[in-house]
Image 1 (spheres, protein in one colour):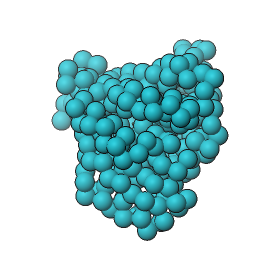
Image 2 (cartoon, helix red, strand yellow):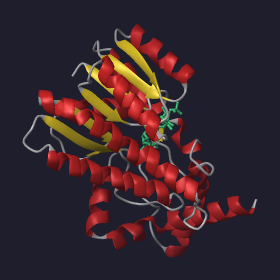
Image 3 (tube, helix red, strand yellow):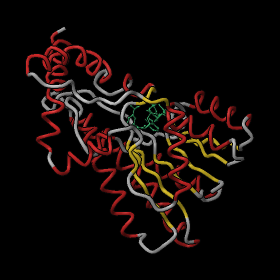
Length: 286
Ligand SMILES: NC(=O)c1ccc[n+]([C@@H]2O[C@H](COP(=O)([O-])OP(=O)(O)OC[C@H]3O[C@@H](n4cnc5c(N)ncnc54)[C@H](OP(=O)(O)O)[C@@H]3O)[C@@H](O)[C@H]2O)c1
């Protein structure tokens, strides 16, 4: 487990994980668009005792993703691939443009397919390797005003499950990791505006709705630090074969409820949905 390819390594969870595995002397392939940010993470990796190799690329472009695969194979097939690059969106279904929808699918899903397809033959040849897909709780349940992202993250879990069936009985593992809120730039850099603002505006409004409806507040789990999520990802890789991983307390139970009794889950979250609806409407009218 000494060579890791981490996509989306220029910030947030990916950067935290790169620094963490570097402490074990790993070689870390860092992939993302922003070269300056990648270079800063590469310097941290080197300082921590690892070896950094930068692979600037745009995973929203098929040609750039295919080039990344070729470059990575030429440099040396990694032991671990962390499919972490991703971006969210902020739009009601009616407001979602073709471009937004396509961008969510291309970056969050198609790039994972292309990289996995490109590296699988080498993994099979040596019968080892681990893929970790960073999905989201939004891969099992939904929140309003980011339908394209929710759809994409559900697809990531489906792709991971399909890959597992094709690698059954081998020493090649694939696991989906599903975080809830993590303190990274993610919520601010979503396409179509900040989904963080809609959550931030919706949560205080949800209190009045909970009071009016005579229900509890929606059971949102506290945000986590990227370093803590990175540690869970590292433990997931060390575990080998593993179930889907829910990083935040209570979110596994919510995912189970979404599968077994979606209406009950929706009732629990109703005050938040209504608060977010108001926050979205206010933003749209301003
Ligand atoms: N933060 C959360 O609350 C949360 C919750 C659940 C799941 N997640 C998932 O966790 C993963 C990591 O997100 P994060 O929270 O660490 O957010 P982040 O700090 O915004 O990191 C996103 C990473 O993806 C890269 N990326 C974005 N577009 C790219 C492109 N076109 N080509 C290549 N790389 C691209 C970014 O690099 P460049 O901009 O330099 O390209 C960056 O390194 C994502 O898949 C996200 O959906 C996050």
